[in-house]
Image (cartoon, rainbow over all chains, first blue to last red; front, side, top):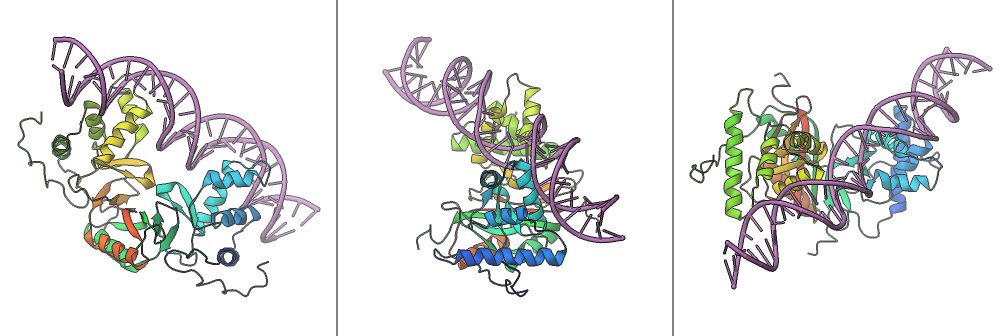
Length: 173
Length: 173
DNA sequence: CCTATAATGTTATATTGTATCATTTTTGTA
DNA sequence: TACAAAAATGATACAATATAACATTATAGG
């Protein structure tokens, strides 16, 4: 399915901010899966069918999904799916930077920027009404955090920013 | 114990950044408890012995403490302490802004700035080596986040910043 | 083909957090 | 003081999230 795509074609297809109501999610999803395949091939790691399926489920929408939500779906597809099935796949995907964990929700969401290998926990805008989540990657925020950390002699390893609020669709005007 | 203190004397005794090895923690703790008492009196809410004790435990150090760690201590002090005992006390303290929840650690830490009623999840520098945690309150960071959110039409309700890294004592030079 | 390694299956259990209802304590008021 | 309403706590059960440990299967490389 993805074997005929030339490498690189999946890059830079993300968009910043929130996705619009009618955005082409099928393309969005295939693009993410395709890029994930490329990256794993480059890195000589194995995006197995199970891992790929979990990634696909996480990318089912732009809303964080709980491990047990994923498990419920897997259980209906393969016999013997259990918590470790999901957590191991998620562990792999997290390590490869293909998904992020939203700490404040105990949930997981696909990463639209899997290429950069910066050790960041990510910057997320999370709608408390509809759950829609946007990953931003704001250098100004990074910079402000860096300066603040420097002031007290703190060495940043993993900045994690999760902003709860209302997305444009849920917050009229 | 705190009844003879004139109001206001507990204000502005926090320090920014990380506490030094030999900082006067007894004073630090008493100051926090005293200010908590004042605030609760002003707000006409009840800092009961149980709640006060939980606050004291959370303030036992500048490291986030898990609910079940608190519970273990309570169980050795009062008969019949159970999870709800701790979670209800923590719920009260969180609501009053006297403690914060560190989402990435499922743990709780005392808030050094309980006066400001901004709806913020807090900005934390968390040492991955020793666990020491500093709450910062950087306006530059707030500002950068605000600007970034505005760009995509997102209305911030509760910004949450948890930066994992190494504190000055664990990160030589 | 064979072996070492990686991935997955399977079962059990640990950790974190809530729901629910009974009881006690406190507050406001007559 | 006495009493009713509200708040707080006690007590039991359970839900939700995550990991440990060991067996089995699949894959890569020689």
